[in-house]
Length: 207
Image (cartoon, rainbow, N blue to C red):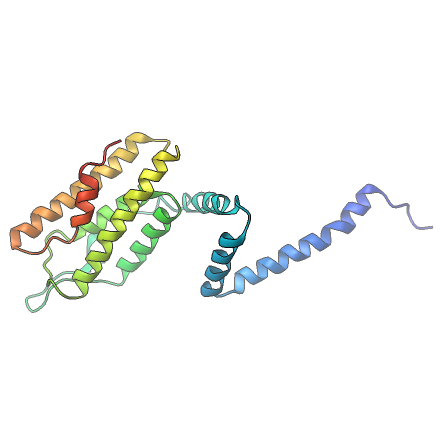
C-alpha cells in the first residue's frame, strides 16, 4: 500500500519545478554573451515594475563593495612615460581602471570611485602630451568621468548612503589635491590643462 501523501511529500514534489527553472536561468546567465546580458538587463529595468531599478542598484552596490578593497593602480601602469622622441601615451591597463571606476560610480558608489580617479590624475603629473592625440583625448574622457563621479557622490549623500563622512571627505580632498597638482604641473610646461571641468566641479564642493 503506498504511503499516504503528506504536506512534506507535497513540498518535495513542488520543489523540482522551481529548482529546474532557476537552474536553467543560471545556465543561461553563465553562457550568455556580455552584449546579450546588457540588452536583457536594460530591457528589464526599462519595462519592469517600479521597484526593480532600485533593487538592481542595491544588489550592484552590495556586489561591488566586496571588491572596493582592491589596491590602487601603480602610476607607471597607467601611462607610458615619454621618451626623447615621443610624448606620454595611455597604456591598456588604464581602461581596466576606468571600467572599475565607472562600475562604482554608475552603481551609486561615487565616493569609492574617487580614489581611483585621483590616482589616474596624479599619474599624469610629470608627463607631457600634445594638445591633439590619444593622450589628450583620453584625458578629456577622464575629466568627464570625474564630473559624473562627483555627481554620483552627491546623490550618495542625498540618499543618506554615506556611513563614514570623514572617509568621504578624505576621498574628495585627495581628488582635489591631485587635480590641483596636475594643474600646477601642466602650467609649468605650458600645456593645456585637461581637467578643467573636474576642477570647477570640485572647487566649491562642500558637505
